[in-house]
Image (cartoon, rainbow, N blue to C red):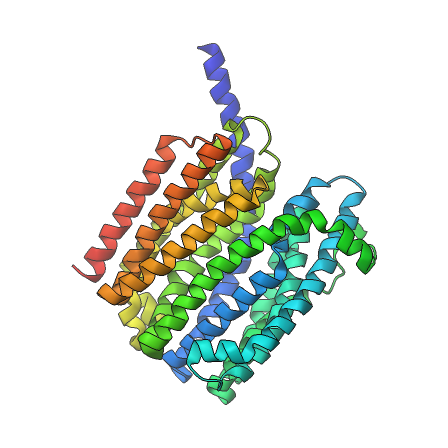
Length: 462
């Protein structure tokens, strides 16, 4: 009994520092992203008031195209670089590896911008049925290049543990981006949407230029193009799989929005985009903040007994659920007021869709924390297979849901999608790596999702 008590006492002491680290990262990055979210809310509110659903729809389609092209161009360096740089921590090679990552960001950013320039007419035709918006895709190609640079700098800062740099850049980019976006929305209206996307990326990128980035107290050394390509081979091998996986996810979102814009019109697309932003993007701020601290730590514990990552994933899922579930419940209770406040009365119709999509958050937390193990193990093929299946399921369910029940059907499809995705991720990690999550973790996520779904129906339909 003494041995058992000592074991549990040891676990309690080991968990406390982990929890403090999670909460510190959440407080630091969550505050910065909270300001970023507020700026985004104001920006979307102005677009909704001065332009209407058509402006929200255009912003959503252009952002999806930027994310999809950026995912293809960045070669997964945002995620794969964190593990590679963190693995060299405490050695002189860390600064050199960081410089390689930085150079890769510049190279793939340029490649991505050129790709979108060439695809601009085709993307306009696919998204809007004409070539009239080719100019918009040409403009946002600048954002693709800037976002690749930002991704490389964020990866270096995350791996080096300088989360304050990420928070400061996010804060500066959001506030400065909003200040510049207001006159663009007011004077250019629909024609200003593309420039708003570029302005936000430009202000965030500028925040990473000064002061000069340092790693382990040293400035990044100069690395030749030849050495960059040679030393980034391992980074890009995993990155290619992550790129394809991310492209599948972004591509599914882009294809659905393009289909919805063609089938349901720009009003339906605007309503969907507004609800999606609140339920997925804004709630996702919590996930992004915690991932900054969680992923590097998980990467150091993937070798050896699968019990260690299982405990870490279970703990992380529990932290997310304790914070997210009450917040989502409040969001659902105030859903119509939230949509009206954040956008306008015209968007209250999206409250039910938003509530149902948000109800899937507990399953999203479970699958999100568990899927990080596949990346941490460097198993790109398995991750691509999982994300490909997820993208197909999401696209098929979303289309079927809209055809059957409109936007509310899409909200229900999100719950089914995350249920199937969670089952897939848990099954793959168990068979591939012997991961056995505590039954309590899985059961809690299922019960929380069921409770939030019932609440969403009572508040918005009952």
